[in-house]
Image 1 (tube, rainbow, N blue to C red):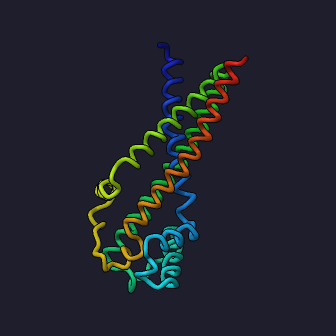
Image 2 (image 1 turned 135 degrees about the vertical axis):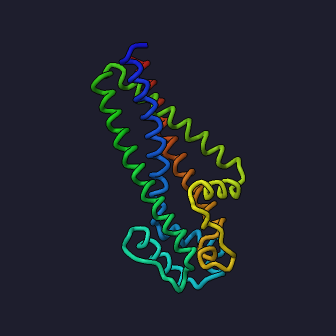
Image 3 (image 1 turned 120 degrees about the vertical axis):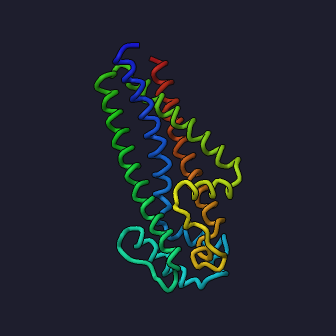
Length: 214
C-alpha cells in the first residue's frame, strides 16, 4: 500500500468518526434547548407532581440561560453541590460543541480532499463513509437500548464528573430532572440519530447503485 492509499484510508476513517459525531451531537443539539420537549418530559416523568409548574418553567429558562453563559443560578433553589455539578455540565457542553464543530470542519475538509485527490472514486468513497457511519450508529443504538440505563448513567457520571453527581431525592435538581427524564432524553437522541442514519444509508446505497449502473 503506497503513501497515497494510506492517506486515503486515514481520511476515510476520520470522515466516518466525524460524521458519527456530527449526527449524534447534532441530535443532542436539536433537543438541548427545546423547552416544549422539556415540558413533555416533565409531564411524563412526574416533575409537575413534585414541583409547581410555573416554578419549573422559570427554572428551566434560568438553566438555559446559565448553560449559554447569560445568567447565574438561584442559590435559594439549588444547593452549592448542585450548582457545582451544573457548572461541570456547562463545561462538558462547551467541550461537546467544540468537538462537534471540529468534527464538522474535519468532515468537510475530508470530502474536499476526496473530491480533489480522488475525483474518479469520489462517489464510491462518499457512499462508503455514509454507509459505514450509518451502520456504526445502528450498532451504538442497539447497544444503548440493550443495556440497563441506570448502569450506563452511572458509568457516564463516573467518567465525566468529579464526584458531585449524587443527590438525595429531596434535591430540587432531582425533583426537576429525574433519572427517567434523562433516560427518555437519551432515547430521543438515538431515535433522531437513527432517522438521520436511515437517510445516510439511503443516500449511500443510492450512490452505490448509481455508480454500478454506469
